[in-house]
Figure 1 (cartoon, rainbow, N blue to C red):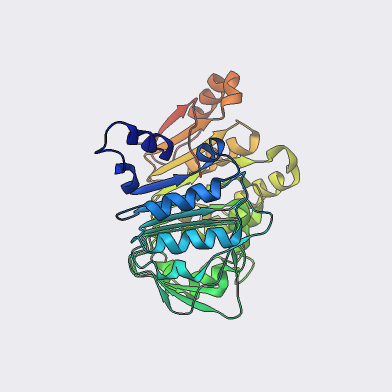
Figure 2 (tube, rainbow, N blue to C red):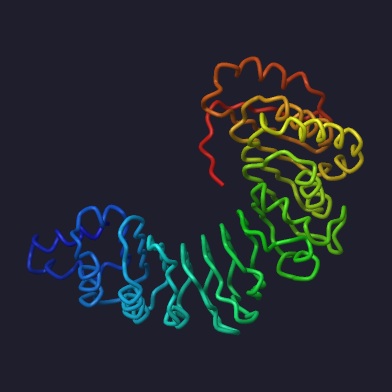
Length: 366
């Protein structure tokens, strides 16, 4: 329940007058800031001072309202005393917010989401119960490389982050990794860091995919990966990106799901498209090896361009175990849907049991 409505329950009866002080999840987002004056900081602090019982979730999303560093620091200190489990900080300040050291005393944290922050991880710091870690536009303060011990971590999301390679994460349970516009992850990381070999579900965008091959470029990795699904968002066509994708697929003997969320800027990459056609026509053996175990393919925000149609044709022709090809058309392109579906159904399929499902809606998000 939003805090505004929870507070209103205090007028219902004497028994309810202070009941809202025990609200376990506190959300201060744009709706909250729309209904308070310039004294938002004082109101939040007063709520925390009067709160009784555990605060299981504290979510501060000041997308439009600027809050001072010292004020937010005091809030974190108060929250840390309430056995907090879920913490979200998204600051709208002109300068990045520097995360206080008090956050690292919250041993009960299970989910931590930080946006637009500077973080200095203490060396060998532990979050013994942390299951999910999301970092967006986060800058790592890096006087030296540090080790972060997260024995229960299952999901790690990195988006527009700098210097994450200065943090060594130790986790035996990590299975979900999302890397969007974060350029510190390369194939060398997969070769030398055991954490990457345990990941089951990997999400990359086109720029991060291209960066993989910037260090230790090769058709093969030194190790086998445990990937079961690969999702690529905003794939701008180029041979280098396709080569990196094929490398991941060929080194993942358990991978059965491939998701391409959108092929972007296809009209601006004519040269790359021709280059791609030439490369794939000469790399049929590698393509067949990469796709031989794929059972489900989804292509989102499909526009029906020549490049996209060619990619579908290649996937169908080389996926001998394919069961489902799901094509979700971009909403603005509905007028050609019947024509596109007719052409897709004419393509050769390496798998006799492969079905093509064509959808006119696309609500997916990376």
